Image (cartoon, rainbow, N blue to C red; front, side, top):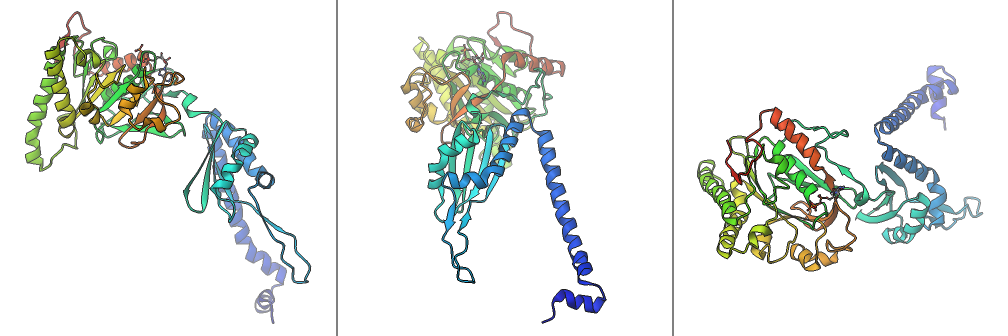
Length: 451
Ligand SMILES: Nc1ncnc2c1ncn2[C@@H]1O[C@H](COP(=O)(O)OP(=O)(O)OP(=O)(O)O)[C@@H](O)[C@H]1O
C-alpha cells in the first residue's frame, strides 16, 4: 500500500522530508504559542502575587516536579500487572499515577487529583501525613467534592492565625473607599474561615444579627467592620444605641441617629421611632404590590440599628422599663426585616437572660467571639458542640469567632477582618469632609436628633 506522504510526494513532486516539515510546521507553531502563553501566564501570576503566594507558587512547582517520584512512595500509584508483549515476553509493568493540578494561594496549595481504581479519598487520607511532611505543610484537608477527583488542601499557614486587613483601608491606614461608593447590596467581608474562604454578609439580602464576646475578644473590631460599611453605604441610615459610647464614638457625628442613654426608656423612644417608620413603610407594600422591601435608595434607605451592650437594657433593674424595651426589640426583630430594618445586637454575654429565645431566633447572623461559659455559647449555637473548638474555649484568640450567616448556616471558625478604631476615626474624617456630618461631637447630651 502507498504511504500517504509518498503519495503527496508523487502528486506534488516534493520529497517526503519537505512534505513532513511543511505539514508539521503549523503544529509546531501552535505548540510554541501554547508554551509561550503558559510561560507568559506563569510570569504574570508570579509578578502579581504577594510574597506569601510566591512561596506557595515555588512549592507548587516543586510538587509537580517531584510527583512522579513521590506518588509511588506514599502509596498513591497503581502498578498494572505486566502483560505479555507481541513477542510473548512479559512487558515492563505499567505504573499509573493520579494526574494532578496544583493551584497556589497565600495559605498554601490546592491539589486536584484524578482518582484511580484503588486510589480514592481513603488512600489520599492514609497518605496525608506523608504528603504533609514531603510538601512542608502544617495541615492537610482532603475532600471529594465529586466522583472522579479528590481535592487536597495543604496549609502552609493557618488562615485563622493570619491577620486579615480590612478592604476599607490602605496599608498606611488611610481610607480606601469613598463615602457613598458602597451600597447595601455590596457584600461586607466579615473574615475568612479556617480554609481561607471569605465569610461575607449582605445587609440588603440578610436579616438581623448578633455579635458576642467577652472583653478583649475582638468584638469591638468586628463591630467596627459593620459600622464602617454601613456608614459608607449611600442607601443605609445608621442608628446606634450605645450606653458606654464605645462602639458609637467614631460614628457619633455622622450616624443618622445616635444615643448614649443608659436608661431603657430613652432607648425605647428611639426604637419606637423605628417602629413608626416601619408603619409608614407599610403603604409601600400596596403601591409596590409586594410584601417586603427589597430595593433601597437614599430616599428609601435600609435602616441598620446597632445596640451595643444590649444587656445593659435587657437586664436593667427597672423591670417595667426593661420589659418595654424588650417588647420594642422583639417587634423590630420579628417584623423589621421586611420593612427594611436590620437589627444588630452586641453583647458580652449572649445568655438566655440577656437574649430571650424568641429574640435570638430572629438573629440569623451570629458572630461569637470568646465567651465566658459553654452555656452562653450553646444558647447561640445549640448544635455547636460538634465543632472541635467552642467559643467558650480559653484558647480562642482575639479576633477569632464562631460564625454563622444566612449564606453559611453551619457555624465555622472565622478570623475576623481587622479594622482598628483609629481607622474608623479616619473614615469618619472623610465622611465629615464630604458633607456627611449630622451633628457636632457630644457634650453631655444623651440623645441627639438627626439634623
Ligand atoms: N480581627 C482581629 N485581627 C487581629 N487582631 C485583633 C482582631 N480583633 C481584635 N484584635 C486584637 O485584640 C484586641 C482586643 O480587641 P477588641 O478591642 O475588639 O476587644 P473587645 O472584645 O471589644 O474588648 P473591649 O470590650 O475591651 O473593647 C485588639 O486591640 C487587637 O489587638
